Structures are given as structure tokens and as C-alpha cells.
Image (cartoon, rainbow, N blue to C red; front, side, top):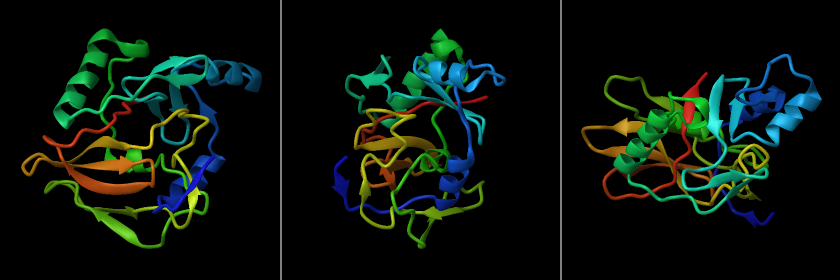
Length: 201
């Protein structure tokens, strides 16, 4: 894996992730490790046991084939991203009809950095109705890319991914860049980013 100078991410989540057992959507929770490993090699959805969230392993535009994400991730405006996610629900993609854009906190929790995250905290102003949230903004030092668990999310492109968190009034929403673990605001109408849908369990 090539190395790249990075900016950091959520240390608490890394500790939780290391302790968590990764289960996949559709798997019997009582399944043996061998059965779980077999399912992990064949399903397009991964269940995070620590949070209960179900994630598509591939970005929209990619296809899950033989344990890999094949094809190019689509770059979508926020509105197009929301419409594409709704279309997944209409057809019950992967047997699930509750897909949505992840919150910025959920998306940021997927970041992985070889040396953890910076101590500096970044305040996320989510909306007038919600309390601000603070998270580490980027990787502490040089790290492998993409800044995500490539076993669970293979072939993740080195691009920004939309979250559903932001200001409807100002039309600025947060995105997470998995080339450097950076979090920032982007214009909903003009920016085009990748999308990784999530569903509550």
C-alpha cells in the first residue's frame, strides 16, 4: 500500500472497532466463525456489531463481485445522491428498504489511520436544531490509503463521500475524504462526491 501524508480521525472509534466482531447483514448471529467468514466473502453488505449499522461495502456505481468492488464509484451531487439512495429503497436493494446517507459522525467513524488521529478537535455544526459535535479532523501522521478498513470496504476510491449532515438552508453538507481522512463542508448543488449508503439494523 502506498504511503501518503494524512490528516486524522476518530481514535475512540478505532479502539471500538478493534474490539468489535465484524458480522454481516443476513448472517445468523450464532453462526460459527467459519460460517461468518464464508458469508463475509460473499455478501455486499457488512454489519458493524458495535453500532448495529449495515453498510454497503461498495460505493454507488461499483458492483460486489468475488469479494471485490468492481467498477468506478459515481460522483454525484447531493440531490442526485439522495435520489439514488431512495431508488435503492424502492427496489429493496440487498433485501433492505431503509437505506440512507450516513451522518457525518457515522461516516467519519469508518476512517482508519495507521498512527491514530490528531489531538486537535474539529467542531461539526450539524444544524440549528442539533448540538455541535467534535471529532478529530484528520490522521496524525503519514498513513496508508485509503483511510478505511479495506477488508470490509475493498477498492474504496481516494475521494470524498457525502454525508447527510449539514445545513439545508445554506445548502452546505459535510463530506469525508478517504484519501486523507479529512472532514469538511461542501456545496450541495455544485460538489460531486461518492456515496456509501447505510441502514439501521
